[in-house]
Image 1 (tube, rainbow, N blue to C red):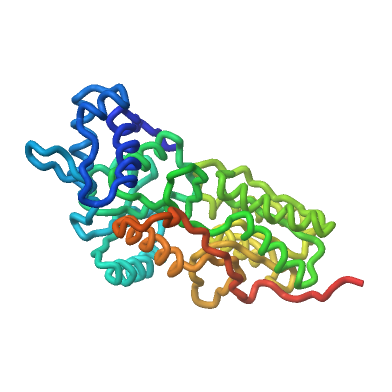
Image 2 (spheres, rainbow, N blue to C red; image 1 turned 90 degrees about the vertical axis):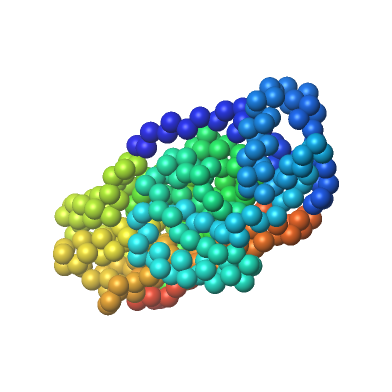
Length: 355
């Protein structure tokens, strides 16, 4: 479990409020005075100065001697930084290329920066010399309310990617996780499967629960029961290895699975499920079909049927949010949900509809 020692102080909170207030002013307009802010928010002059310095450092405000503060909200560094988990090495090159292409079209440079965990990434935000940050959280970690407060308190826009947060004022781009589960169940049902299973291959954080709920709701709405295989993986445990060990034990007790179609809720454990099945003498999709959900590509000789949220669209929408922020575009959305798509691999077969 990641220990989070981030504290959300008064200056953080005030910065968040003033950032939102700046959006109500046009570029070049005079902003609130220090005294006005002190009176309205009931804070000390030191707290106001700290918040205003942050807003000036990131180009949101401009301090003019003897005249006060003026709304600027212009790019200062012409750079977008993407904070990424250290475990995405398999697609970091693709992500870097996509971000570079989209950022250049919007007039920004870009770079990827690894973070060891979500808490460390949030702690890095005030030190980044950037006009905007794309924040990709670890999939197996929840974003805590304290971390979210710090993210939203930053004077530059921070867009959370692949981590839907239904909180007003939070910028994010994500796929529709519940619909992804619905799509996985629908695809198996369309291929004639009426005995379904689901392997909860990650800790039950919000994203995983949404996928699980979508799959179960769809299956049960069609009158199909689902066998839920639950290794009860904890945060910090290696989910691919735990899924492999659990599924191999399951097959030792059930040499002939009771399902014909299995949904594994994440990609890397799905690979280990296939390995466990092969070691137990089962062949996919001959003995049972498998579908997963993930953005990962496939290894040589492996092409898993999966629900996919296109990375190019995710990155494009994220950069669009940055661009519209600096264009002062009125009524522009602050989040986007990217629809999921089916990648038809070779792990699902059509068994026909039962009579």
